[in-house]
Length: 170
Image (cartoon, helix red, strand yellow):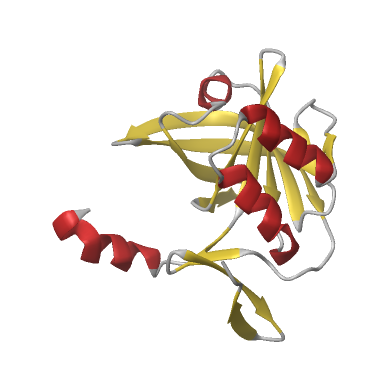
């Protein structure tokens, strides 16, 4: 990053929750871990996700295919590590299945033990440099168990427990 290291570190101080985005792309499951997710609207509900322009599944999401966001808990840390490691798609899909991924009513994968899951259809996409900002209309939401959330902050994963932040070992 060179001279941009300070700026990169400054952006890392903006903490966020971590989610798993899944979509069917033809006959295949495409998915990625997302830490840039926000509530775009509450009436009606909509989510915005910043997606790398080369992410698998972006084409299917951009075409309006249904997609799902599973909000991850601290218990999902090992899954996130496996999904973000330099492994094959088949190995990452096996990790998802081992973590209990199941089909949602719209055919996408979701994690039954997620903090919440949101089924979405794309309302708009906006290219922003190396990312695409995807806004999805929420068509269904399910509240999960009340576990501690998985958070991304300062280049690391964290959680909050009992009102106090704690760093999860890397």
